Length: 185
Image (cartoon, rainbow, N blue to C red; front, side, top):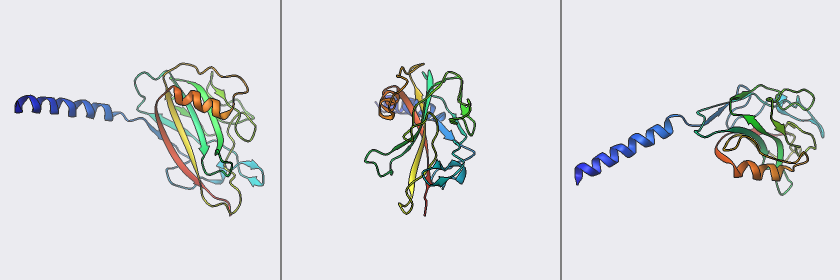
C-alpha cells in the first residue's frame, strides 16, 4: 500500500512540475508590474498630452492548443461604473509572440497582420493611453495577453468592448497580465 501511494505521489509531482515548467508569461520593455507607466503611454486629448503609445509586449510559455492571441488593456478604476477599455486587439496569429511599441497606433498599420483592433472607449480603433481624471488618484492599467482556443473571433466591425471581452473570455485557454499604474495630479 505504501509503495503504491509513493509511486502515485511521485507521478503526480512529476506531472505537476511539467505543467508549471513553461508558465504563460507576459513581459515588456516599456511597462512593469506595479510600476508607474511613462508619459509615452498617456493619451493625447481630454487634457492629457502624452505620446499615446501602446507598450512593447512579449509573451512566452505558450499553452498547448493555442490557436491565436488577443491583447486587452483595461482600467477598472475609471469613474464610469464599468471601467475603461484602452485597447483590445484580437485574431493575432499564434506565430506572433511579441508586439512592438506603437503596434496599437490608430494612424499607422503596425498591428500584426490579420489582427483586428476593436474600438476603444475613446472611440477609435487602436490603443488609447492612460488619462485618469486629475486628482482621482492612482489608476491600475491591466495589460493582458490571452491565449485563445480559436484561430479567429468573429466580431462585427462595430463590436463593443463588452462584446469583444465576452468573446475573448469565452475562448481563453490562459492569460498573463502586467498591471501598471498611472496618476494625474
